[in-house]
View: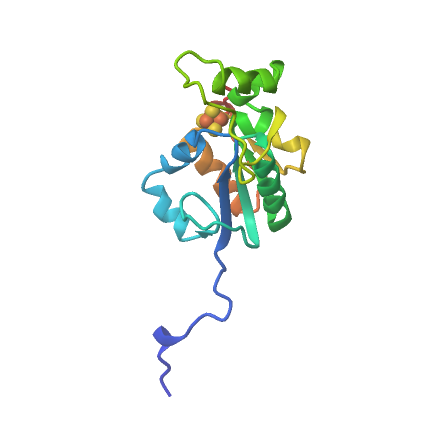
Length: 192
Ligand code: SF4
């Protein structure tokens, strides 16, 4: 008897890896650089599906294989989201200078946050007389200092750069998806 092999569904079709991404205290530049992998994104989508990410607009993170974190921690919501990613992602990656060491937002760490808020919202030239520091319960509380993410959760890998190049994302993710320890090599390793 002839069997129509075209209609056979593989019993163990490879599962797509689930990937979540987020920008905490970052500028989205790392996400933009990720998108610069251009048409390789289509190849990537054969192997992965995105969960929570600015690319999908999904707002809650589910169980994922890989979590990519852009940005450090400047407020309580950043800390909450980071902890959710750590709890749900098998492998957590600090992407870019802001996630790795605080980056540009951490420039404020030598200043008093109270003085910054007062000068920005209260005494700056051109402010109206009734301007005040925003104080709505819906707003997350600002942290005294900006922190890199490894100070709050365990980080499995670091992808350096400001931002990491598209090629660095590509090599890094391909290594991770193949179960290898990512090796960027000298050309793709940037700390600026
Ligand atoms: Fe933006 Fe650079 Fe920070 Fe990435 S590392 S979020 S590109 S400032």
